[in-house]
Length: 205
Ligand SMILES: [Fe+2]
Image 1 (tube, rainbow, N blue to C red):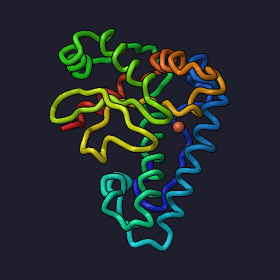
Image 2: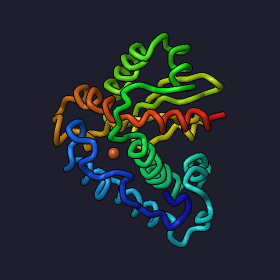
Image 3: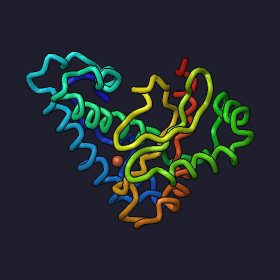
Image 4: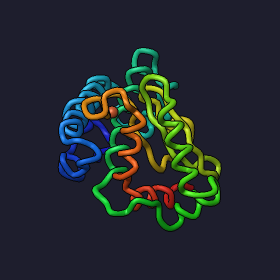
């Protein structure tokens, strides 16, 4: 994905129906083509005629609080919306692998006791997000942590290194699971791209 203005919305790294039967085609199409597209368009609009066009997506998020008042909130929401959605989409795959691998598996076992315990804790955190937001597995000061963020806030503004995320905005599941967020999260665990998650983990300092 392009990291600088003007931002773009490239196709998903898999077909819209690749995550069936766990995440439905219609949701994926709307999520990517409409919801994410809107964040990309609004971010570009906010940066039009702005002297902050040379900042990367990550820099915009990290510095959102320090930007002038009139663009601080739209930058946080829309740059976060673009970053978080790509992190979520790239974190999924039609994969046979249902468990973390390598260094990440080891770190999860060390931190949470077992993958099942991690899954349970992550699932509870994601289910408990009030309103819209995300649950994340992050590395923070060398330690794995599960955190949640409201709206389009992102762990990178907190200086944390993201490894995995699930979008729990209703638009991510309402067409298929209606109000049953827990059912969506259970399904999502079947399409986690654990190879990608491990790559992310290995890149965190
Ligand atoms: Fe979303």
